[in-house]
Length: 73
Image (cartoon, rainbow, N blue to C red):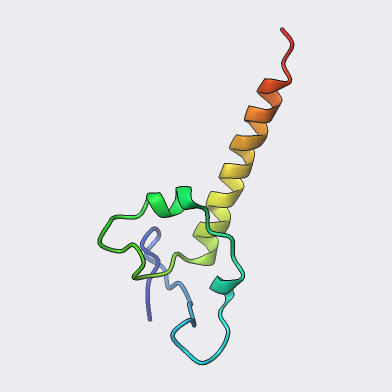
């Protein structure tokens, strides 16, 4: 079984099987893919937990940027 290149846990990807996989339903940002070493890009799947954690951090960062733009000081 493949392991996530970020946390080294099993990524539970089923894309290589005849069944559907959770990874086809996830939004994976280009920013997250840029964090991967070149030798693993497009070869292994990032686990759902790491994808969700990154997306949450990105969302928090973007909401803070949006809040700053509303600052009228």
